Image (cartoon, rainbow, N blue to C red; front, top):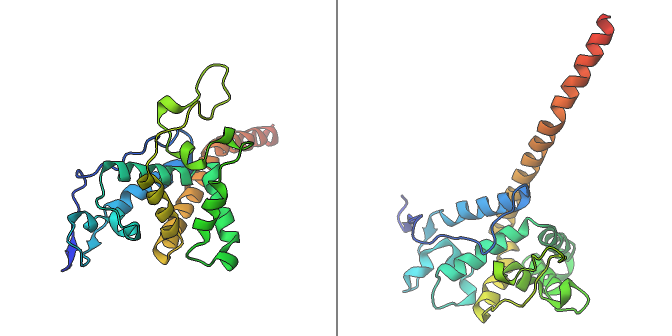
Amino acid sequence: MNKGQLQLDSHWLLHRPITGPRNGHIGEQVFYEKWLELQQREVEFREVDEPEHTTMLARIIINARLPEIGERECSVAASWACYLGCNIGASVIHLGDRLKDGAGAYRRFSAAWAMHNTRSIGVNGGYRTIEIMLAPADCLNTGPLSYGGLKREPDLSLTDYEVVEHLWLWLGTDEGAAWLAECLREIDRRQAAAWRAEHEPNNAADIGETDSVEKV
């Protein structure tokens, strides 16, 4: 271990999302796995008294100036990481890339998030995106005749909003951009592998049929 660094205890904070990655959704699974890996990296000490600021999450959102980092903050952050892998998360990332010249590299994803998170009666049933992102199971509309979405607004705190906003800001930093690129590469790799696994047996069967016809 290098001097001035702390080896984290992986059992100290769980980083468990409110709603975990869905089966078959490669993007959600990759972002969550990469987020867990990131949270276990060694963290440089900073000139602060609070021991919580030696965690990776606390360093990432240090500008939020939270008094402590606990399980709730870790759960919100892990939920945000999962959300990056869904279609709406991907659309925020795409819009952020388009806003780079106007909003600047650092604030581009934060600006995109502000646009997506604005409450609108005709969008998502009038719920904010963050409310959907952080909704527990008892807020979800899962009835047999429902169309998904939320049946009621989750109870979110100002700290929840702070954590998510500063995570989007971090994604615009060099460190955040490097992590995002690493995730996207892994998603591409797994999607290509899944495509090959699905189609190669069919291709092999087609080749076998062709060989049989030629031999006849």
